[in-house]
Image (cartoon, rainbow, N blue to C red):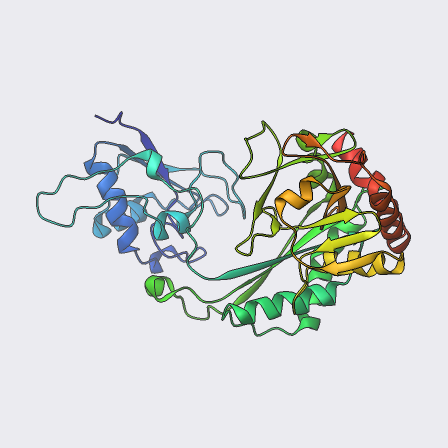
Length: 379
C-alpha cells in the first residue's frame, strides 16, 4: 500500500477559473476536481491553500467553503494566508498544465474500478503537445550575433515541420533584442548571453480540449549566461579539449556524446557539428539549405584561412584517425576535441587548425572566445 501523503492545491487558476479578485464569478474546472477527489478517495490528505483576501483583508472563507461544497470538492483543510505573488518557486511543485495534460493520475473508467494514484507519477513539466523548433545563438560583448540569420533559419525549420508562425524574421530578431536588453547592462566583465528562439504551433488535435480562445502559435525567447553554460564543460575537459565518445564505443564516465547519423557520418548528439582535420583539409557534413549558423561561419573563416574545406560525411573511424576533431556550435563557436573513444588524437588539443579558427572567431567577435569559455569551465 502506498503511504498516504499530503497534497496542497492552489485554488484560483488551478481548481477553478482565475477571476482576479471577482471570486463570486469563479467557475470550477471539472477535470481538476475529478483528480483532487481521486486523490482523496485514495486516502491522501488534501489541503487547499489560497491567497483570497490576502491584499484586501476581506474574509472569503464562508463564500469559498460554499463554492467548494457546491463544486463537490473533497478536501481536508482550507488554508487562507497564501502570499500574493506573480511567480511561485518550489522544489516540490507540479505545474497545473503538467497536472492537466499529463498522465498524472489513473482515474477509474469502470464502476468499481480501484483508483490508482501515486505521487511518483506526477509529471513536473507538461508533456509535449505541440511541435516546437528551437534555435540557439549568443551575444558577443552583449550584442547578438547574426540574429536575423538565426531568425530566418528557425522559420525555415519551422516551415519544414509544418509549424505555422505569424512573425517575420525582423519581428523575431526584435523579440531577441527585447529579451536580452534587461540583462545586457548587468553582465560581469567578459561574460555574454546565450539565447534560444522557440517557435511553437498549436496543440495537436489529441489535446483539442486544451485549446483556449485566443491561443496563437507563439515565439518564446530564453536567455542565460554564457558562463553558466561554460561551467557545464568542466566534466568533459581533458588535456586542453573535451573528451568525446561515439555510442558504439565503450562508455566513458564523462564524455561528449557523438554518434553515427543514418548515412554513417559522425554527428553530435548535443546539437553541434563535428569537423575533422587532416593537414590543411577540413571536412564537415554538408550544410544543406538551412546551415547551422556557427558551422556556416566557421567554414567561412576556414576558407579565409586557406583551408581546403570539403562538405562530406566523416565516419567515426575516420575521425579517430584524424589529426584534429572540433565541434562547431554556439555558444562555444569552436570546441577542440582532445580524445575520442578514450584515445588521444594525433595532435594535442587545441591543434594548430583549432587555434587558427579560434583566433579568427576572436577577431570577428572582438573578444577572446577561447579564453571566455575556458575560464568559465575552470580549465
